[in-house]
Amino acid sequence: MIRSFRFATLLEAVLCTLFAGVVLAPTALKAQDSSSMVGTVTDATGASLQGTIVTLSNKATGVTYTQTTNRQGFYTFPNVAPHDGYTAVFSHEGFSSVQVDSLSLNVGQPRTLDEKLSAGAIATV
Image 1 (cartoon, one colour):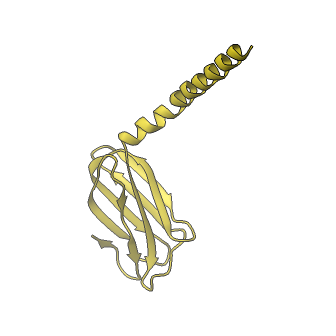
Image 2: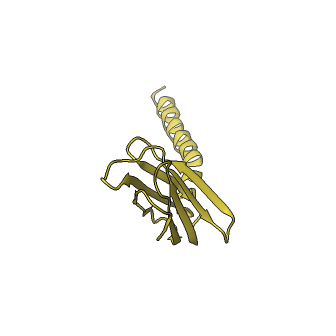
């Protein structure tokens, strides 16, 4: 009886481990072939800009991602395809837009890009 209980417990532990491996493996593998970009958008005084639209695009790959900043002015682009030549555009009603060209996103290397928006014409960085 004790021996069959130990075997059942061991079998249960092995099955749980295998199940976790099957469920979690795709997520771990995905992280190895993607990049990400995060940042905070503020105004000229340093106050957070909620509702800023941040667009990340790459003409070479035809990929475009869009996010909107939260109350803290924070945005995140998780699981972005790594590549050179991304362009980020930051736009918010009542503020000038900022465009940042020639961004490189590399595998497994999160990129931080903070921007400050002010009144005036569109700026290209």
